[in-house]
Length: 189
Image 1 (cartoon, helix red, strand yellow):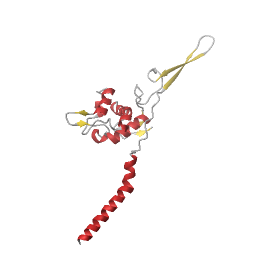
Image 2: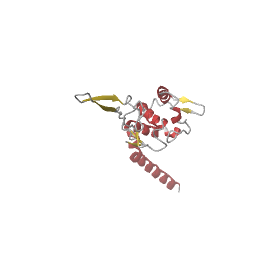
Image 3: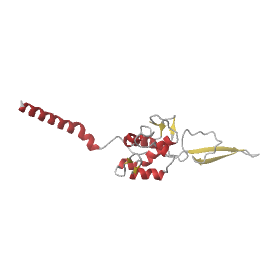
Image 4: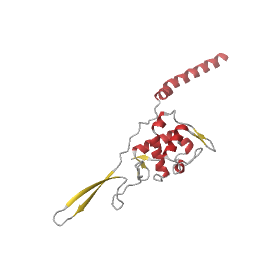
């Protein structure tokens, strides 16, 4: 009977070892979470054409303005794009590629403490916090961590994916903080 128990235990250990080598080891070795990198968002440019009619001839002038200086009386409407071009949201939940990459990083590294939509859990409500702190302060806390009254946030400076995607995280969270995206799961534009 004792030999039977030893034989069964040995088989279970061998089976577990084979499972780890075949199923788990390749995933651990690759270190991939599906993140393919950031894609910068190009600023949008508006073209406004103005017709001026002197007595003899018609002159058409083109005025090119960047997205920060578009005249308010034009009929061009931007749907939930902030002044700095940090993010763009369409249809209430479709993010530009840069902000969507920030959502993926947030989902993988931040949501477990700050909530699915940044509403706060163990960590604070980031939608509220980003309306109070500066971008520089945000980057500092992400890099170096912070001790608070309830707990502490770890420093992420040793995580290359988080550090490389800080701008994307900030863009995504600012879309939440500005109310451009509601309490919904975002999609990519």
